[in-house]
Image: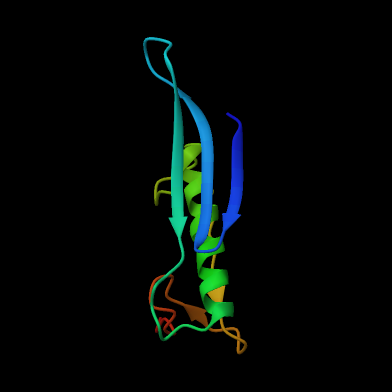
Amino acid sequence: MKLEIEQVTNGYVIKYDDELDDGTVVKKRNVVADSNNLEFDDDQVEKQSFLNLVYEIQELFGVFTSKHNSVNIEYELINKDGEKLDRDTLEVVKE
């Protein structure tokens, strides 16, 4: 699979060709939009959007995580104190 990724003013656009079961090729476009949470600063929005882009790419390639896998991939947002942040709210995750 070949992806074309473009950074736009409000996030990212992923373009790719998807082959259907009958061999037909369909042009697809996925949009990974920036958060519209007004409480986030530009740096927070940029990091959150990029993480969402990485998750979208992972899903397009069919790489999924499961508690049943012997190995998983995990991405985290952390604050300057090294505390893990919730991917959607950017609040510190209490473990």
